[in-house]
Amino acid sequence: MTPTHPLRLRGFRLLFAGRTLSLLGDGVVPAALVIAVTRATGDVSALALVLACAMVPKLLLLPLGGVVADRFDARRVAVAADLARCAAQLFVGLELLGGDPSLGPIALAEAVGGTASAFAMPTQSPLVAGTVTDGAARQRANSLMGVANSATRLCGPALAAALIWAAGPGLAFVLDAASFAVSAALLTALRVERTALPRASVLADLKEGWGEVRSRDWYWTSLVAHAAWNGAAAVLTTLGPAVAIHRLGGEGVWFWVLEAGAIGLVLGSLLAARARPHRPVLVANLGLATYALPLVLLALAAPAPLLIAAYGLALAALGYLTPVWETVVQQQVPPQALARVTSYDWLLSLAAMPAGYALAPLAAGLWGPAVPLAVSAALVAAACLATAAVPGVRAIGVVRAEPAAAAPVGDRAAKG
Image (cartoon, rainbow, N blue to C red; front, side, top):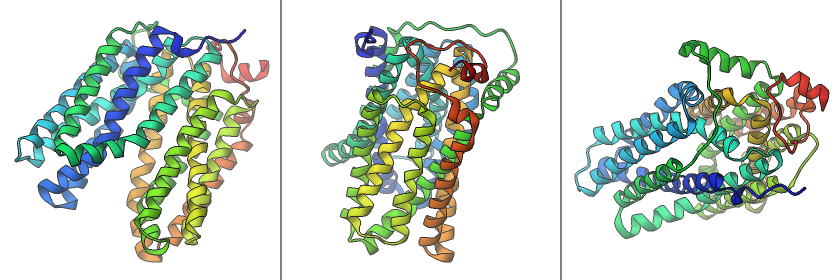
């Protein structure tokens, strides 16, 4: 029997539309924020301060966000987070449109937005699982969410450039606020089943969520590999533009590298809706190892067409992994712990990136960019390929048509 297409489900349509709008807004803001702060202060350190104000609360509060999403209705948490981000971005937009923006209030507003993101990010997986209960349709739903994320990454910077050219960065923030407001309205109409948690302290909830992560060897070892990937991505993002501009032909080369990556993300997400490998986590993790290719090619200053093709392939592997990974996690993790488990996933992934941003320029200053690029390539390849030696990674089978019961992963593997 062919599973129902997720977009035929009213709940998923509301979720998909809301998330797509907010993702598009988020795709606009980074470019607008850089230009706005640079215009207002002309100081690189001021930009770093604002970006840190958005990132640090997100990192610190992600586990708490997972607890809140599991303990309370994930839909209500997502609505509250969207409204908070709407207010924060509207404040920044009005501050910029006023003509005399102040750095302090903008930094504070971005800190509020980062805090709200820490509570919003763990809600997506429970909301998808709650609106699409059929296992086969759920992977297609996650693929659609991946396509939306990839497409907004592709279109967001171009839209930001058009808005900034037409009306300045302030309007970009106002429109981002509007996207969060519409998303909140759509999520308000959503109805999702939830499993109530027994009363416990926040610390006990955090420990229980970490216990769910630690008890699954396929999960925590994959998280190590994913963190290595994100750290390597930060190194490439930091050092890649200079190598492309000075050694491979100019700014246009880096633009095409980024465009190839965005296209690869979309294609990989589309592939995830169709492909059903027998060992999905193993295949997806091995695919991530291809990120070593663009790192090595940058280290060698290889011809630009090779770099562009390799980066497109590597990002296609990421686009494929994300829906597959989320579907398997939704299948294997008890629904009452899903937000906490995914919050630890986000935490490890995001924490690895600042480390890469900080270490890459230091290493490049000491030994040149080729050394950190090559080391990052070796680390990401080793970490991703090493997951093939983990029994749980090899044991996780195909996603079934019906969601799995909340049993220990070892029991599921034995029955699969």
